[in-house]
Image 1 (cartoon, rainbow, N blue to C red):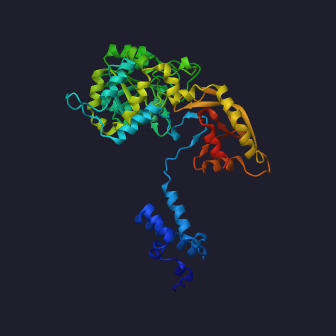
Image 2 (cartoon, rainbow, N blue to C red):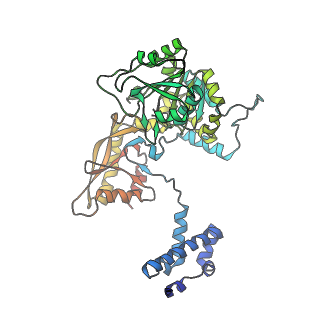
Length: 463
Ligand SMILES: *Cc1c(COP(=O)(O)O)cnc(C)c1O
């Protein structure tokens, strides 16, 4: 049985005819023949599907040019969209972690536009490796002997392990077998690097003698991992960097620490929770430390390895280095970011991460007062809009229990008056520049810590 073809199919205009329609011809000028034709084909396909399923033409068939214009515009929107991060987590991995300092943004733009001395030395000393200049700067800032920069901290740990301990044993405390988000688990990385993980101690207590007893002729590395996103409390013991370094020297086995976030300055001076500093561990005699570029450091995604020259040279020569190396944009952004650390007095203003983390509650309170009247006037018939104190998180592996007092706008649904909180959150997620809040305790919270331009938020929300 052949089904009778719907007469609606014959009402679909031919692509050729559409292309000659004056308004569509203008789109061809603007977007090019290829894209316009492909989009029209897709629209025809959609129309056919609609006829097949619903025996009608879609509404937009009344006006192909207008529908085409919309589709073409939609296609111009990049999938990496700027958003307002009012989630209350400053270094949010899902939102790309640290925002760059202006000087880093300029540095990146410059190396994107022009050939650069990436692996070229102007004094005729021949080709250097691409992180040479950065390594010098890192050594100056931290007192390290040498440094290596790769794609991210996960890559740094992998490369370190593959270079120092492939085919051998690595001793790690049971209390430090960290899993951070996105499937980075210390035991799995060990396997990928070809190392055998030797777990010592117990979940809550590990002593120096546990490491000592695990050492044999197959041991290639004694390692610590900073338990960034959890804390073991109560009856606990861990081996300090200093003790581990001493044991390493005595038994002639290198030592390494994965710091995760790490911070090159003392966070406590800014009233923030203490975070381990790479230079402290190097001073204590640890051979190698690794940390991220886009966590507390406030730079681009990168992994930084600092430590003894002999090991860094071996790491630089490992074949995996090529696969894990950072690109010129990352290196440019990281160099500009690190230069800010040469003037620590300015850091709080110039480094967005530090600026947001150290923002005063009063400043956020004032911002809330400035925003509240207009937002209340706009949303007040459907929601109770208030300003309230709140707590923000640092994010990116910092302890979820270390909270920073801030200020927020909150929305509580008025029963029977229309939208629910989830509908409001979804509406905001669909804005041209989405506004991302957080629902908790029966309210939708807009944490103002990461909002620097109040007017921009008003423009987005009052539409
Ligand atoms: C964040 C983190 C990593 C991974 O760093 P990326 O830069 O995200 O690759 C590794 N180890 C620890 C302890 C971390 O906190």
